[in-house]
Length: 304
Image 1 (tube, rainbow, N blue to C red):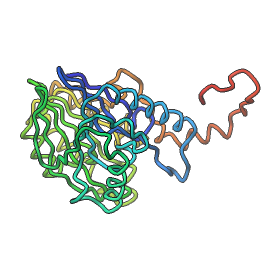
Image 2 (cartoon, helix red, strand yellow):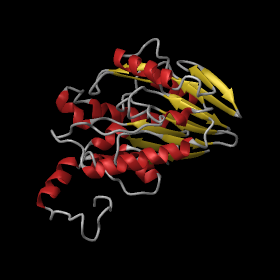
Image 3 (tube, rainbow, N blue to C red):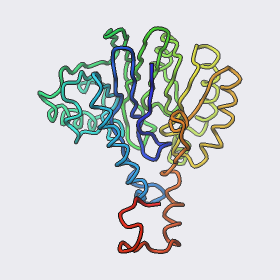
Image 4 (cartoon, rainbow, N blue to C red):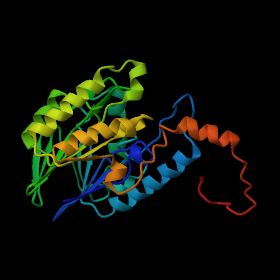
């Protein structure tokens, strides 16, 4: 099984878009990306906009080759609704928009389904169900609502199993191992885990200040009780300016159990590009940088 993060917070935009290639199937999970509208009271920097556009184009290109698209959330970071052609002739496994979903996401879901009417090959409401296709087993947990995010959101954890490899995709959970997540995680015993980590930057907004300690405890239990050998830790976690410092003891803990723990960027073999976490710094640097002259060398080049 080949797993390729296509866009992620550690790569410069809010996303968990992931491509999965197996022996008989190619799958795209959460084909979307976005930017935080305001961070430190500042709008996205132009470098964030550049990276976002690059990621969305990459998602479009990978979508052309897949047979299956999984949508775990109806928010822009997880779904690119304008790219309707992306969904032509695909089989969609999606969060059921009729139940257990906040009103704004329900409205967005039905608007999306109306836009792609007649395009996709099949649309399957996946909540709490399992499926077998092309030598794979797809398993979806019962969805759960997160109230700790900026706006309430619902998540649908997903599992792809092929042979001895089991890939667990948490969707948004902020590092919180809620019961639906715990049950399916322990039952499926993943070998590879893509986990949305704790959001330290939300603590000032009322999120659980003890969440970090609980996450460390839960992570250690996961390392001890499952066959996991690779963990991608990203999304909310990578919006924290101190995430690389926080990552070091976690990576060491994982290493002690024979597990590799990385961000999505590191999993791809790239350096972290924590643009949202650095937004204030980027805007400050612009204040002191010489103005670019569009008429001189460098015109048309991407920022920085």
